[in-house]
Image 1 (tube, rainbow, N blue to C red):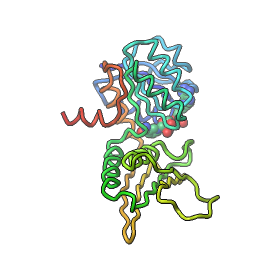
Image 2: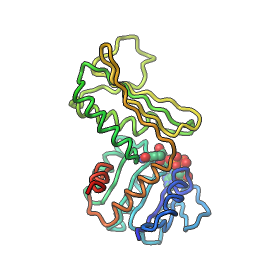
Image 3: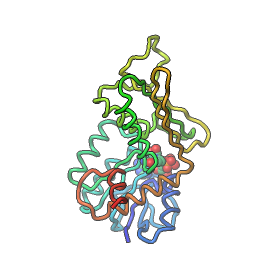
Length: 254
Ligand SMILES: NC(=O)c1ccc[n+]([C@@H]2O[C@H](COP(=O)([O-])OP(=O)(O)OC[C@H]3O[C@@H](n4cnc5c(N)ncnc54)[C@H](O)[C@@H]3O)[C@@H](O)[C@H]2O)c1
């Protein structure tokens, strides 16, 4: 039985993880952390440093400010893995995730859905075939409560395309202040916020006389909770390193 510490347990994703774990027999939530506290079926702490229960994996769906306390907790409890699902990290925080993974087992994905990770692979393939003759634009849409923009997933898709293009694309988030033609090297990223949209991502390859568009639509938050719990079970007992959805997909193939 894999023991989980759920950070952000009182939030929307926290609720989705709690209900998903209830249906599983291979894991349980041993304790939770949330700055708002909470009266839940397990002990809830406001500060991760106060947790007394032993756990195997920390699953985080909270806020970027929780990152350093989580990594400190894992360092203080050797063998504990971190599954980091929170988005909106600064470049410095992303670097810290990578360096912590040299001493800790860390799973980090800005999108826990299998479908999005497949979309990423398809976008890489499309970029490899279409190349510089096609302009790439990414459009994402989310609910009106989302704090960060663009979404972590849009950036993940942009990074995947950019890597195939030799990492020399210029991310362009806003064109309202510019009055000039689009440069070839631009990769446009656009955010729509409204209502209760769970998560839409579209990667557009616009060439001369033809447009190819790849898209993914998340219908419920459950799919991210399922991905996170599967990742947590996968991470229990792993050695130090940086893991992502591609490792989980490979593991599923075996
Ligand atoms: N990787 C993915 O696939 C994926 C999918 C969905 C959401 N997310 C991300 O997960 C995060 C949470 O999303 P949500 O919709 O549940 O948000 P939410 O606002 O509903 O919940 C966040 C919870 O975290 C708590 N919290 C805030 N700061 C904290 C801290 N420092 N320590 C402990 N708890 C803290 C809040 O009190 C709240 O209960 C966001 O960053 C979101 O973008 C990632």
